[in-house]
Length: 527
Image (tube, rainbow, N blue to C red; front, side):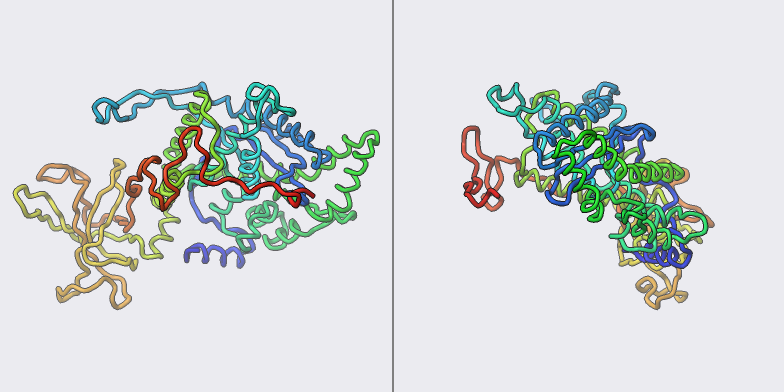
């Protein structure tokens, strides 16, 4: 946690209300998101109990499983979920635009421009908390390998064709959710905690009701009082007034209401199923309303300037998976090979570095945190001295002196970067922090702010005279960062067939047994 985040949390405790961590919204928010509020049983991991799903906040679709131990009912739940979600997911697949990309020509090996399709928009799935994202990933894993009657005509219990298809999409959403800054699958608690700091712990922030209580408490209550009420207040029957959908249920609900309702359904009593559905809806509806309330709060923030670029990468991801599905490729494997896993890890590390840089450039409040950490500084230009580089073709290398109150962690020759008005990034290097006598020393060696000198090394054009506006003028306020604005990925990885033996070796060829086989089933595996 950064220093400015700690300060925001302390201010939230003192003020009794959440404090903003940002001045803009750093995540894409669809005009028509699909909200999914799942509910699972406590007895079996991933066993669905019910869900509210839909794009209409007033008319959600209720799905319920009166007896989660009945596999037929669970499979029927998955089929109904696929019928509800797939039209929304597929609704973005055919509205496309054309983009020019450079691809390698297989004959020449050179990069050539080609026109490719890019979906104009993409679906966005919102769940209440981080537990909902893990449940979506679990659903995708349990659905994408189901066999249909077309694939295996002799299968005793074939799945409808749309069930494994939804499983592939949910798996893709779950994998994309692990990429920092991605927006295909997001949690409302994650969105809200990125933009507001509360006076409670990060674990307590996963309770959506308590989080909203800190951000927008009712009249006459502080955030802490409202959060405590949301977490623990119960009615006359001992049930929580703000039920969790984490997606696990409350034990008091399980023992006093859920178990008797299941027993009545098992006994075949008239109206037992309708009673069960009403019971599940009563647990889900408060969280459903809370998610949409969070959407309203997020829409009060203006979107960051670089959010659209990250959403475009999500659109590319959605388009690529659409193409894989339409090409008839098999579902995602249960386990990635060594090269694929390393590529995913490298891509996520690069995405995290890019996200951190872009958020700081979009938001002065985030940049303030980087300045406090010594990773950036802001100052006023006091002098500009024109100078030229040495060599056969001298280039302009102006020396810019500025006064700053920040304390950046600089060393001689450190690389510096600042954004220009045209979207480019100007590079520079730290020269010295001169003393009045003209001697050079490390910046702020005595802990005092002072004067810094930087040498511009780029962003001024290719001529002997810098382009207009590329060199700051005396009196101008500028902000330099010690981090790159567009970090690049790491080194290239070998092809899967060239994987060394230390990382599992090449993948098995067609017809060859995999290197790892599952343990044999024994009598102890069955209850």
